[in-house]
Structures are given as C-alpha cells and as structure tokens.
Image (cartoon, rainbow, N blue to C red; front, side):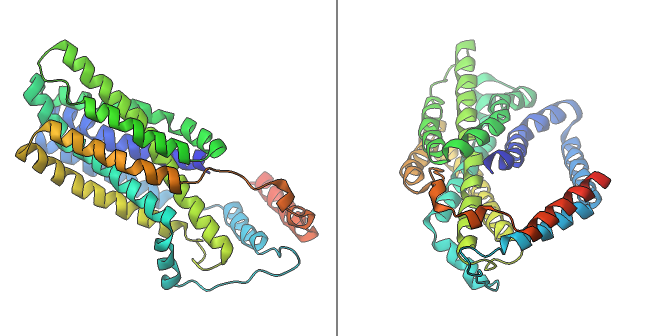
Length: 324
C-alpha cells in the first residue's frame, strides 16, 4: 500500500520544493507577471486532465465485484453492515494513530513552508544570491524525493514506525547545522547545500509512511464495522483530514518563520524547527504501526478459498479486460 501511495506523495514533495526553483528561474528570466501566468497555465492543464479522466467499464465492474467480495461471510456468519454517519467518522479523531499522523503532517508542512518563506532571503543576505541562484538551492531538497517509491516498498515490508521515528530524529541534525554557515564563502555554501540534501532525505522517510499509516488505520476501523464510512470506506475522508492538517501547517509555517527571523534570528528558527521534529520522535515510535502481519494460523480455509460465484466473477473480469 505504501509503495502505491508513495507516487502521489512524490508528486506533492517535488511540487512543494520545486515551486521556489521554477519561480526563481521564471522571475529572473521573464519578470514578476510571468510567475503568475505560469501558475495559471499549470492550473489549467490540471483542470483539463481531470475532465479527461474517465473510468473504463472494467474498472467500474472490478469496483462493484470488490464490494461483493468484501461482503463475504467470515466463519459462517454474515458481516453486519453499518450506515455511514458523520458522527461515526468523528470517532476516528479519537484514534491516537490518526491524531499522531495528522500532527506529523502538520509538522512536515510547517517545516517545508518555513524554509520556503525565509531561505531565499537568508541566501540573499548571506551569499548575495539572486532569485535564480536562491531557487536552485532548493534542488538538493527536491532530488531525494525520487527515493519515495523505494521508501514505500521498504515501508510495506517493515512498517512505517522506524521510518517515521528515524526520519524525525535525524531531521534535527541538518536543521540544527543550518545555523553554521555565517560567512560568504564557498565552504559555507557547500555546508548549506549538504544540510539541505540531508534534510531532503529525512523528509522522504516521513511523507509516504504518514499516508500509509492513515490508510492502514482507516482500513482497520472499517473492517470492524463495514459500511460505517460509506462507499469510499473512509479513504476520501481521512485524506481530507490529511490535507486539512497539511494546509494548516503550510499556513502557520511562513507566519512563524517570518516572525522568528524578524524578531530573533535565522538560528533561532532552525532550533525551533529542530525541536518540532524532536517532539514527534516519541509519538512516532509509540503509536505508528510496525507493519507486522498476522500469522497464517489466524486464517481459516473458508476465508482464503474463493467460492464458485467469486471464481465466475473473476473469470468474467479477465474476459472483459482481454476484450478491451
């Protein structure tokens, strides 16, 4: 599951980090208005692609058949179906794994947007960089994002707990060391780039496991009371909460970062962001899933052997796919 989720999270990570890079290049070459024109063009392409998306018949049929198979009796007793209710979904917020994952999402967004808001000014004052040079300095954070699928694969095998724990723990190191460059020299530029790259690697260890943890939690809750979250089984709702937490962090990050740098210093901001990561380490280790699969003895032959009706459905799906 994490491997699949890693691809959209890869896009989110790259988009968040590459925004300043592209913006800096466009501003330097074409001016202020061109930045907004490019943003509108990208938004237009996104809307067009959404309108062109269409589910095939086989995809719809497989979705219906999946719902039929999900209703299969276990142990000879039919599953009890529950009607969807906003109050039932509100109970999900009482789950400590959900709260922990939402806090992690908020912290990651807070840190990334805090760096986005202040790093360009820091580079301009310290090294005299222009908008193009400052934008290119975000590349060391963006390149490690291509490791997301690998992290997703490993997370599926070993669980998100250790990735989240070590990701937040190790992210404190580059954040603290970003205070060191204080002179306009090639040596300090190298240190700055190295710390950004290390932070990019640690952020990759965090992002996909957060989404995996959320989807795994909602799956477990849905299995306890099938239908309680509606046809979407709660995935749309839990990702909506994720987006809400991420957006809240994206809103608070630049405000806090700008105030801290203006009122105190860049070093204090880095300490603040490092402390935020450090505070997430205990909860990540305690609440996150280890990804341990239940032993095979917990399953009965009836649970894993398809019925005649299920075999017929599978054959029909395979025939439709071959025809199309």
